[in-house]
Length: 78
Image 1 (cartoon, rainbow, N blue to C red):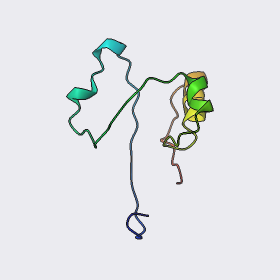
Image 2: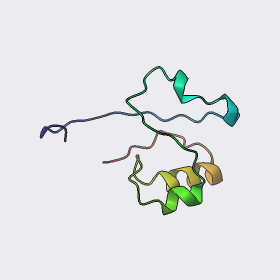
Image 3: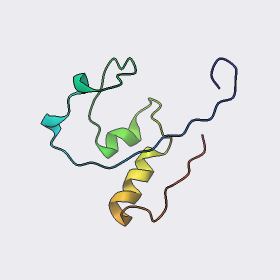
């Protein structure tokens, strides 16, 4: 809900492999008022008490790493 109204949001996530030194949030085309960013290991992501979206991201990444890309896009419920 946003401002008390139900909303629907569609997000698409893609996998890209780039060297860490080439990632520069200052060059983002939409900063969305991001105040900070950080790299996470899967263990850190799994242990954090922060809310990370999509919910269950660690499991999705682990499935991707062990099983490869899904045949069809996953539909997540929020």
